[in-house]
Image (tube, rainbow, N blue to C red; front, side):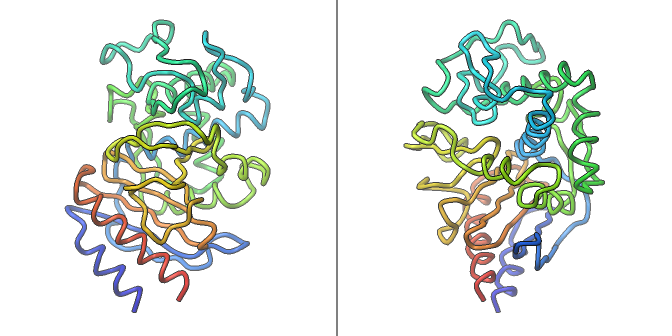
Length: 294
């Protein structure tokens, strides 16, 4: 019965859409259902989850140092990953991407400033320290080993976000987001220790904004994914645990994993984020959690 509810809710999604949901066990995904289009859609800020995995691979292999100061205000790679670096949301001039001219807005770990610039800085660091392009590193270190075969990187997709596409330029199918689940729950491209670290709040006391949902006190974030915590209103459901982690994008894409309830949900849409998402995403989330317990 719960599955019918999920399908009914999904049919109310606007435009062209895809969703995938299922259960998670010790060996990864134990139940999987994919509905809707098999095509590729822009991820917008959900792209940051793939970029975060690439950064953690670079940390584990010694290409990046996680905690060494890298900015003038002593912010580190971990601060960039968790939006706690003091870097602004956007570049000061559209299509002018000079990392040397970035104006830092605060000291690190003083407030949560959601930042596209921070993720473009991560991509730049990965490229310079690995002696590969960010594109090459992303596909070699993350997409190929995860089996995300439909992934594309288009820096012009949201051109104002930055030069590499790391913050918002990935295009993917729903199957690619299913592959991403494995990247966050199973040791493989990353160790168990790193996966646990990614999913824990970093500087958990910081306040900040969740784009589209307002100021949150506190605003927990992991080393890549957003963490639900006590946030309200929120784009996940009322049944989701506080430890639910993931991301959503202005393209209408969303992705979360709830390890306490042993389930996940990924959505893609041809219609940009709006009131429809604030209404339907929590309904879908609650239906997925309910099915996981059925």
